[in-house]
Structures are given as structure tokens and as C-alpha cells.
Image (cartoon, rainbow, N blue to C red; front, side, top):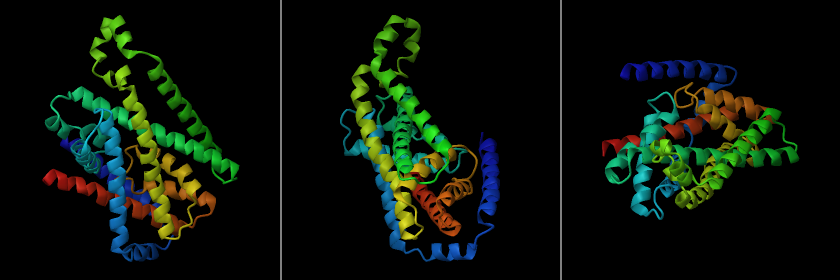
Amino acid sequence: MFKKIASSKFLRFGISAILVYFAFRNVNVSVIIKELIQVPLWFILVNLLYSLLISLIGSYRWSLLLFDRPGKSEVFNFLKSTYLGAFYSLAFPTGLAGDLLKWFPLQKKYPELTKTRLLSSVLLDRFIGFSSFTILALISVIIGKILKISFPDFIFWLFLGLSIGVVFFYIAIFSFDVEKIIKKYPILEKLNEIVSLLKKGNKRRIILSLLVSFLSEFTWIIQTWFVSDFFHAGFSVISVFVFVPIIALVLVLPISFAGFGAREQLYLFFFSQIGIASEKTLLVSTFLGITGILSSLIGGLFLLF
């Protein structure tokens, strides 16, 4: 197990190094490094606090799937687990691995919640987050089309298809009574614990979680624009809402370490199409990557204490 993790980690380091080389080979790297070094401490701290806010909203969304009215202690416990998941993601081949491990500490805190229920809540929370930023991205693409912002046509069709799939999913779970279906077919009893979060009594929680998710994803995506504005990169708000979700989708794949290299290539590919200078694009992308690692390392502190 350890050998597989270690080998995949070294492979990701190698892929990241290659992608980083090709991303930076045609720009003045010394200028980018100089600007990163000169970033004031207050701006780094503000971004870490902003990342904390994003994680806090996401943790509240996750806790809503398991508690009718999660209190401060529940949200804090889920926040710690969220940070632990981010920390684990640095070691495993994909960020999804961190999601599949972050619920472990909650078993001791809430013994009444089974392992299956906790894991199911993680997967459902992940899907709710995915569905909200997919819809936000589609809205942004439509607005971008109206404003005649240049970007590949496949982005529109991609998010349109994903949004249709998301809408059909919610129509399905709100149209069918899962409890009745399980009672009608006893063979499905084994799935009872897995689909328990989709039962009639929990549908209110799903709606609330989805509403919170729109706030969470909006807050997360807009951070890229804040960083762009600080570095005077010239990213428009619409372009950020169009491009960042698709970049995030690709970065879920286990192709690089903490997204380095792959993220830079994707930022260059998309933002160059709206005339953003490569140096500024890479400056924003690199800063966001470094901030993400620093934020994830906070999870390491939770592991120590």
C-alpha cells in the first residue's frame, strides 16, 4: 500500500515538473518569482483566512446532511475533518482520496453514525458541490456568450450536458420515494443504509445543503478574481466563473502533485484566449497553488494535536 502511494507520488512529482517546465519555458521566471516574494504577509494571511471561510461554509453544508440543526461543535468537528482531507490529498494520487478518508475522525465523535452513513454523506456532499458549481458555470457561460466573451464552444456544451444530468438527478431523487421502493423489493435492503440520506425525511436537508453550496462555490470561485485583481492580471469576473470550474474538474484527475503544472497549463490555455499575458496568468495560478498547499498543511496541525 505504502509503496503504491509513494510511487504514485513520485510519478506525480515527475509529471508536475514536466508540465511546469513547459508552462514557464517561454516566460521570464525571475520576474514571477520576484513578484511572489514581494507579496505582503497580510495578503497571504487574508487568503488563508478566506480559504478558512470557504472550508467553514463547506463543512456546514456537509454537516447539514447528517444533522437537522448542526451546532458550533458539529461544524467545528466537520471543519477539522475537512482540513484533514485536504492534508491527505497532498499524499494521495487524487483529491478524491482525501474526501474518502476525511470522515474517519468523525466516527469517534459520533458513534451513532455508521461508517456507511458517513461515507455516503461525503459522496453526496461532493456531488452537491459539483452540481452547484456546474450550474453556476453554465449561467456564467450564457452571460459570457451574451457579452461576446471569446472561449471555446465545447465549454458551453460541456456545462449544458452536465447541468442537464444534475437536474435529472434531483428530479429523480425528489420524485421517487426511496423507502417505498426498498420495502417493495427486499433484495434492496442491503442498500438501505447507503441511500438513507435520500429518503423523504432527509430531502429538506439536501435542499438546504444545495442552497449553502451555491454560496460556498461562489465564494471559492471568486477568490481567483480577488487574487487576479491584486496582481493586476485583468481576469474578468465572468471569465473566472466560466474557466475555473472546468479547470477544477480536470484537476480532480490524479495527474500532478497538488495540481502544479496541470493547473498552470490549464490557466494558460483558457485565459490566453481572452488576451491575458502569460506572466500574469502564471503568477495568479502559482500563488493560488501555494496558498492551497499552505491551507492544506493546516490539516497536518490537526493531525499533530
